[in-house]
Length: 54
Length: 184
Image (cartoon, rainbow over all chains, first blue to last red; front, side, top):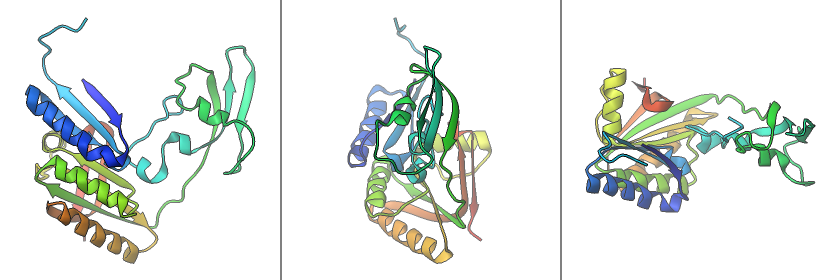
């Protein structure tokens, strides 16, 4: 799953923190990267889906 | 690019696609051909139809011609790789760098796991920490040096653990490839 999002720079740190905490909380294989200067963040969550998505 | 208003690594300096399209020729669903925009960089008259079509994903018409704004090729380049203990620290440095009025040509954030993937895929030996990649472009070595000094100060005040100046940082999308070279 790839999430591609952007926020105002004043909220950037909060978004990065949220992404990191979400990865840690759900223990998923997550990668955080982004065009930071534009307030952009990609969160790439990789793994095997145990629950089928309808 | 016009269909989805694409942007990327250097958008922080040059803007996205929407900021670099001057004119469009579009074929509408009715078969009518319209032309939007002007070659002039400034226009105060009429609706901004060019902007309407950019990012419309083909839902309003088919773009058959586009006139783009060109940018000059910078004389000088400099770059830095900055290491942090946490992505949170790195993200706070981003806000301070942009807020200080430094105008990087690229400012990328990658966490330690992403760096690890790049190391494996591109046979590199980057330090596996949360990292910022910065690139500056300008007219003189002196101005670039000043920008790097100020950037280093800001990064250090946000707990950067390492600041390495390099001559080239290149990242192709999809993390497929990244090359760094120490500054000579």
